[in-house]
Image 1 (cartoon, rainbow, N blue to C red):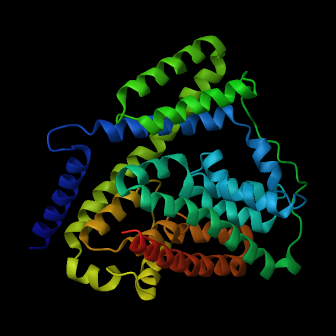
Image 2 (image 1 turned 135 degrees about the horizontal axis):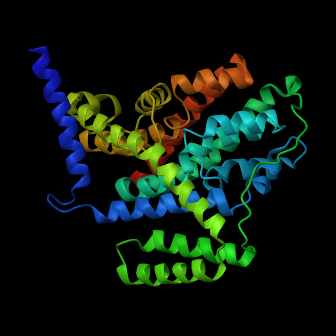
Length: 355
């Protein structure tokens, strides 16, 4: 009996994985694959062709406050960080002298607004939830970071020597060439397979840039970084889709609707708690939230879960506590849950106003 139940759950997970890859039934989801491929390429390019030193040096305790929090809140996108890399980077920038507040802001926003996560959120959950996720992550990052800093201001001391030098590959591109390169990549991402002709035109422009401007070593480094990201993330992502299939078969639509099926304070709080204590590998939160939405979750609590989920998990909490201490970590966890709850509530109200 139990064995049959487990087998059926596993089959449900496999069926969900199959249906996710086939859209519509029998046709490979070219849109999703192309979008992810371009997003992986952009993420790899960011590691190689954007100066991480230029970003990280603005997070130091001597940087202007507005500048530090602004950079920290959006640097997850600029640095292409994900949940597997944000923790060591957080520990590193903290050790090298980053202020407590900006480091916390970076820790929160990084996994939520990296290019891969945002791309898949737009593709699978829609622009309304994607924009709510971006705006919420950026605003909440600054609020949470500054609050933690303010509470522990008297105890905060500078760490390290403030030297943010990191190993970087010499790209060989000047500023306008770099700008044109990334503009071309993002144009390809925006048009995707919805507009094949513009995408092919931009792909041709990208190929021309590679031939004319690129040196061999940074080009190879770009390929290595893109492949490395894919190898790290795709297996976890597929496992997350499989888990979402199992979750969908276990969840009762009536129960889910009762707890998180409306845009109430309690529903958003429950979603934030679930997000904080569940483990979401990079991108896995998207198919899981998609499943919950299809099963009866309201879009407000979905936003709350998307904000709290990538930023926290039990393993994540343990690592953070080792870096900044138990008291600071406890406050960080409480603020993530609290602010995500209210962000989801506000997002749900906005969704209701605009239909």
